[in-house]
Image 1: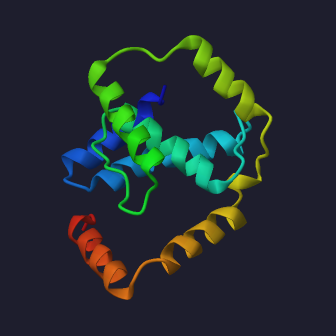
Image 2 (image 1 turned 30 degrees about the vertical axis):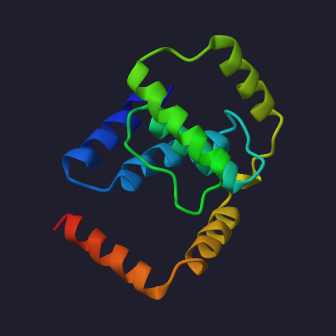
Image 3 (image 1 turned 90 degrees about the vertical axis):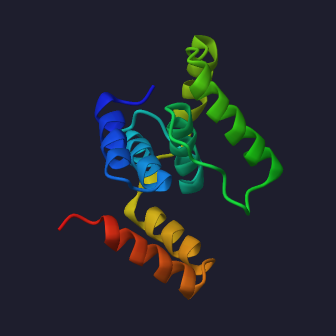
Length: 144
């Protein structure tokens, strides 16, 4: 279950007209913080980000999967969005099992080095036009 502050920050982003990915960023930030403070670990930075995105979808952020995502990922994203609408609580046993598995993972996935490496890899895949477009879009919603 996401923290109250995270939900509030995401709702604030939505009110301000920001993109679903920006709203989901709050959940990813929360997940990275959890790994850093030792609440649980993550096998990789990508996994920590994926957990945050899944949390965002289950909290009701209308975040579609990326076009380059695998079929399994797209299916899981659909399930997460459906779960947000159903309003059912997550299974206690399942939550406990996944938390227990994550506790065994390392903490380096949330280090500054790991995050900057991931960011660089992600940016490399995008075209200059794509990066420029999103920068202009971000500038429109930036506080003055």
